[in-house]
Image (cartoon, rainbow, N blue to C red; front, side, top):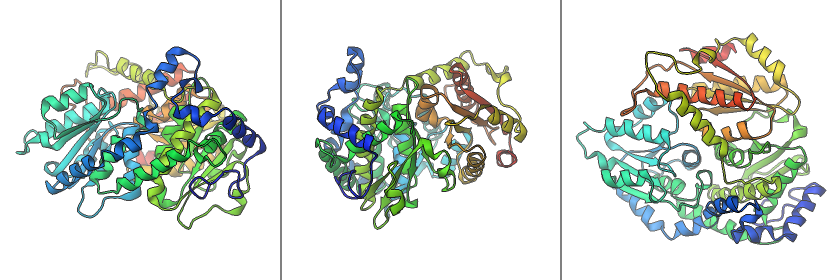
Length: 539
């Protein structure tokens, strides 16, 4: 697929005969047309489910909707820049923050525009790292939450609103919000006099929101040319309406869904260094959308070349190529490999739409609703249960059975007993995400993959609870889960809450652990203490 709209069945990418048959079936059933007609029966015959699906299809036309509001965003960005803001911090979680991280890492900030920072962790070390990376009285904070009630962004907001109280500036002008119309966040922003509250279309789920205000407004604030990104997405949307093999988003969705139905349900995402963080966004889209009812596609990003070759019989490969880059001829001729080409970075807009449309199509082939996330709510409820009746003088519920001392032999025994053919290992790290921890976990990841010959994913908590956590609990059985927690260097209070950020992330880890056990998943927890890098290296 090395050109906009080029067929996947061309010489560029070979498809297995049964995938071609499935693509012909999809075309014969007018699947693309029905999606664009918002026909919810594509995914369910249940009237109640159909009604919910109909309320989640706004992503189909949002790029055109936002192009009509382009000047609104660019004028706001110019206002923020001229007012001397040097940083913009996104206070979000899940899709609303991962899309910004992808755009930030891919494009950076234009000269003279604020630097984009993303806070999507309740770990106190992470909160403090963000605070220390910016000058508070020159920072704009954007509270991003579809529901307007998400716990983590509310806690971030309370903390920084409180920190700016004595700054000497009008702190109201340091805050903006992106949310659905009529949410508590919208009301709070209006009541407290935020600089601006942006109302997003309510019929878009968080993981499908990159081409809405959630992704494009922060990009505009960084000086990124969002018109080119949105125009690229709009063009791809037009191509996705064709009932023919040249419909690349349709063909990609059939490629994923049909292979998953035939035992290859591990999607390996391969990118050039310039597009490295695209995998973060794609991972949460695929996992949260497809991982339910015991089915699902496991997305795997960020692996080493050696690890990518483990368990190849259960994998498919999606290769992103950029500019003059291209897929090796040997890989291109393999039926389980697909090439997705970008002429330049601004083709990222087309890729965002392509992956969203393809995920919706894969959901149809899998027989699931790709627009709900039932087990995400389950994990939230378990966290709330752990925090209920919190008392600082006693341990959190279940804490006595949680967090073993780091021990390589204990880890080896656990994995040897539970890793089976077609398993995967998920490393879930409730620790600060920085260069040291990323590198330490990458080294552990490769060692585990090469030792146990299965894919290994790495996620930082609690952000994965709002994305891949759905697949962990609701997807196919066979995942083996290794959880890490630590002791923060410095804990900090959350205004208006009886507990600290350190307590909150510990409760989220316990809630995740208990929910995995409830679903009979193989899970072990290690407490790395205060020297987490050394403890990881010992493991």
